Amino acid sequence: MKSNVIAVVGGGASAVSFLDSLAREYRDTARRPLTLFLVEKRRFTGRGLAYDADLSTNLLNTRAGYITPFPDKPGHFYGWLTANRHQWEEDFPGLAVDEQTFVPRPLFGLYLEYMMSELSGRLAQLGINLVQLRAEVLDMHRTNDGDVILRTDTSLTIRADQVILSCGNLQSREYSALDAHPGFHSSPYPIKRLTRTIDKDAGVAILGARLSAIDIALGLAGAGHRGPMTMVSRSGYYPSVRGTQGRYVPRVLTLERIRQEVRKAGGRLALATLVGLAVEECAHAGCGDVSTLMLPPAPPRDPLAWFEAEIAAATRPRPWQAVLYATNSFVDYAWQYLDEADKVLFLKHYQAAWMAYRVSIPVENAEKLVALAKAGRLRFANGTAEVATRAGGGFDVALSGPAGRADHGFDAVIGAFGSPRDPALLDSRLVGNLLGSGLARAHRHGGIDVDGDTNRLIDAHGWTVPNIRVIGELTSGVYFFTSVLEINARHAARCAHDLMAAIAATQPAVAPATAFALARHG
Image (tube, rainbow, N blue to C red; front, side):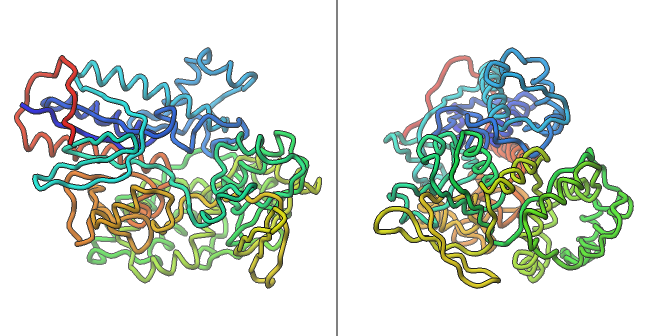
């Protein structure tokens, strides 16, 4: 009997979640011969771009006691931290950790690396043949019999029965024409590279104002950068600051209640219904006056004053933040059923504010930003940026915003946009080839299209591809909020269950494999 072959493209946090769920599904069901290829272009598997080995100034925005890649193992990361201090304290000397600590993201990456290593052993004990490859998948196509052929940059091709795409946060190629110019950085990571390549006295433009932009400003400053830095917010919004509250269990704004509302409305969900439930929940949580939820809050006129006010507010619990974070349990489901007109309305008028208030930062990071601003080392600017090179070196950045157009000169420019929602702007040959061949289609609200119940890919003809599943940022149009570990881990578990059920339906069970078997190569 042939071995079923699974190819997992991408070896970051979502892959760790998927492999853990796959091991559990494989253990609890009748076993089939299974070979698993894990293809990752980075040096370490488990970390991904978000948690790569980098500066300790890159902090998680979730407390250590709450973050986990395993939906069924709350507190797992913190448990590992306390039980394995000898594994990490040399790389993070003097770091005091409790459940409320916002630890460096590279430390969480180290944990994921260890989890991947443990998973390798667990899969081997189960009889699963795991093959880890350092390569980049460039293209995929389906054969006449339904298998998937994956082509890599190492000239290796893999023939697989099932494929999981967990590509993580792909970078933007919006300014790719400038990549060849010294001083331009389309991606900020690793930030320690920026600290080595950007002159300490250079004037730096940071295009973006979310977590990556803050990592850049604090990383450069911490490494001794002396030149002026300008953080440019396209929308004018900046992240809120995390209060002292813990997690909150909603009474009204729950997945079951959202499902009830969808059934009552015949398979639809109105934005007004969601807002009404949120207002009711906020009343239970003691949030105070939240009537402004009906209108998007305006961007701050003075970002420095905004951060100072946020720091003051963060000394106490902020219940509305806890309510917002609790939406992780249903936001991906609710988005699928939201009225199309309401989706367009939300993306146009609410999304920027949602991200600013939902994706908050630790107070210590906000305090550092304020200190830099007051010292004249960091300024804030709003507007859409147009970047052009100067004949003698450096860049002109034209900002167009509510106050009109203003031109600025910089020695270095760093992109900190995150993954663009438009897949045509992704710096990924794989995504470009999938769209070009018609094996995938772009979703009108971002990323590529997948079936909302199973994460299965949908092709250019509207057909569901039964053996290719997608997890993470590439599914942003279908699920909206896909930058959260908790949501991606839940989707990974669903994919593992769906995949093993598909395998079980096509082949009878056998004893676990005991010898290493290579997958079929095309």
